[in-house]
Image (cartoon, rainbow, N blue to C red):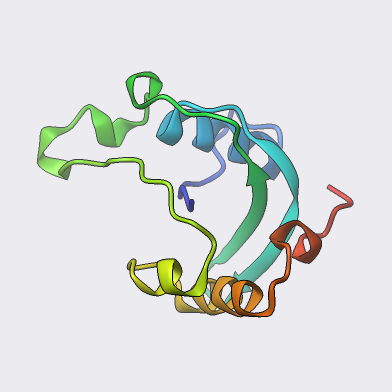
Length: 118
């Protein structure tokens, strides 16, 4: 899953921001494996981490998107890491979608792709 967000002033670092975002958006405690990929251009930098989540709770999600009914409905859905399952969903950004599809097609464990020095 790809929760999105940013580093807030209370976050100590990217690791803390990732944990907070997963808690807010998924109601889960992530086990961060490592950095998967960084996308950057002259305006922004996005860090994509690989993390394992044992379970989540829709009832425990606290992000601001859940407080505003005008933002729509956000449902958690488990998607198998197979090429057909990944192609069946709208996954953005395309560079990350391609990385995940390629790993699934090659039978690569995503944890092996992550920089496990985190």
